Image (tube, rainbow, N blue to C red; front, side, top):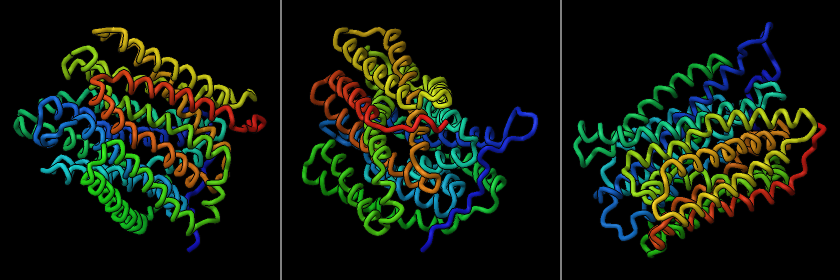
Length: 483
């Protein structure tokens, strides 16, 4: 069946007199989408930490609770990873506006349902389904911004919109202790963990409806029925595959990190089948050297993002022997830095390109600085018997500032090296490969903590991976004349 792209192009259009432009409203709406979808996925980490600290029955009598908790996060990202490429393809076919609205409504329903589950397996299934629905957001968000923003401001637009990621991380991390305390008062101590999912799921559902109304206003009717049915069909198959791998591997006694690796293998087997069926346009994206280099370099970025996002509260609490509430407050310095870093990185990237320098040198520099700072953080944890909360806050903030700034640089560079008709597929492939880091990181890091009794080894691995990714960026060929 031929692909249909029904999205009207508004790139470069500005209203007379300057000031607030229609694409600014689009950026703001997508910022909200990132905020709610990231709050929904981030809340799992603090809740799992609380469940472990309170020896909650949800985790059973696990002998390695951090490994099990990390695996729950990894399985979410297994689902999230699997719809990256199909999500981009569906966006190219049914319209990026449609897929963005469907993704948010799906996330709201699945997050609400997560808070109603009574058993671990059912909870894991809902987390996988949440990931499958949220997985279609990224490629369509990046594509719609590129389509409806003047080229000279594409990097800034991507940076502003994805600032919602940092706000969502901050909201989830800082609100988790208070929502759980409130849950204890309303639902009872045993069910206190449900409240974060119920509140954030409801808020996401409401914002998803607002997004659907906005997307209809800017481009006409949404192809919601066909796209939702197609996504439901894909997700049913993928969810069954993810859970089958999990149950078989767990039953065989495989360690949590091994299960996560198997989920990555599953992802590439399934995506390989897609390439085999549609080898034309999709194959050209997969053979683009620059796309592949950016994609594999981004494994380290997603590893870093979800190592710290999932385990930052636990890292601080264990190192400083602090309370759950204090650890959550310190961890927000890691999340909150993106509010400055994302738009700053996008703007710096646009200016570097406009001056003929290209985006790549800045991306390399920021990645190297960030990697070194992570290694400094690891050395500080190793050298201090009881690290200072203030020092950890400063290190987390500065490290995260560089980390968040480099992400829109990479996104804008990817947009520069692919044709407009391939954006959805390219961003889908990019985030699919990058999500390998998000799938493996929580489970492997939790396993390392259970083995060594410290987060230091996991932090060192994280920093080394970031420096390795800088080496891949060096190999990218950028046409700096395209300003």
